[in-house]
Image (cartoon, rainbow, N blue to C red; front, side, top):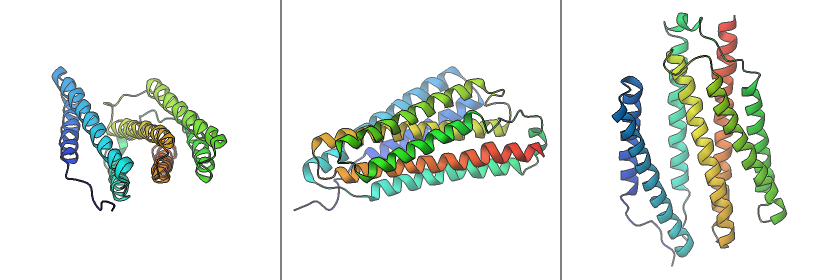
Length: 247
């Protein structure tokens, strides 16, 4: 008889608690920049990753040995990501159309048809490879599509780091700069998470688990979600802002 629910766990509460403390000290570090804020920031980030690993291990144990899986956890996770980036875009439009817009006229806007456009091409190419792999993921010859998808994602992250170092402004110059680094930076973090999900789902293939289609479907859907978020970021933060202040 299959289980209908997971056992009670304190890991979601602990992850939420340390995630709140993580963001709290992130904001304090940006505002006051005391050294101990940075140390607490690293400590709480480590706790978040540690408890998230334990909770993922617990869920995976239920799936592997008790053949239980549910899509609700993945749906809630993606929904929380949607609200997160909704807040980013809300802040962006609030800044653009507020009184602070006059200060943005002197801001060196990033040219959108350079490295940013190439990054967009990389993510779209990786999404295409993900679709090819998804059509026939049980074929071992088709694994090269997944490898190319992961390679494009890693190349995107490298280009994103290069773009950050080549920017003419810093995160503390204007509110728009904060939104730019916050939105694109956390998108890069989600790309990193998406790559981790793809690698983990590919490893689960060798367990001959009956729930492998569920794993790979979630990983590939999350990867497409990350691609869609980047299209919105590229459209609004790069192209829209570029043409808005070019006129």
